[in-house]
Length: 225
Image 1 (cartoon, one colour):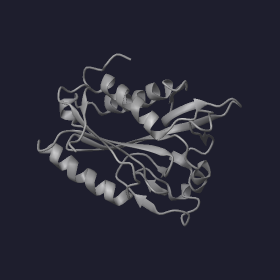
Image 2 (image 1 turned 180 degrees about the vertical axis):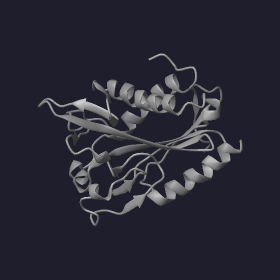
Image 3 (image 1 turned 120 degrees about the vertical axis):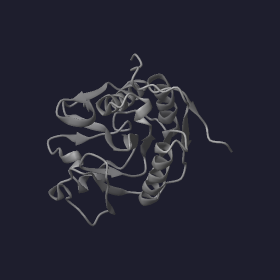
């Protein structure tokens, strides 16, 4: 994929990765602080890779009827776009705090670039994934003909700085999705790299994600020890 000129910025982006699970509200609080700092030109842009303990989040378009089992895991209302989704172990979550003032001020182009980032990363593992008309996220065709979602996307923009982002199913417990209608779509299922026969670790997927991020969005740097 050719770099979209409106998406690439000249300054390198901080790439941070947490090995241990991060509580959801702690992550949101940290993102909001960083977003304010970026908007005020007091901090660099940042990508944060992590996992959460099992939980459900409700986006701004969530329909309470899609919360099938509200007592199964904690449920958090969130300001990101989209509907209900699940986060938990075995899933790579990527939060993208990027300054869209420096990246063309085009939210659609930004979301399309995030989708392409996921599609290209999955392709590195031999997975043919793509967008589907009228549906949010990244999808694959299963051997039995079903269409299943393998990655979710939901972002929020504040003062032209993005946050929230993506989740890629590496090897989560897929039955945990049964407590919700993922993203409000009842007709289709959810899958993972493991369910597709791919034995990849989070480190494997993150390494591929890094390379594709640099190609699409620009250079990164690691946090100081």
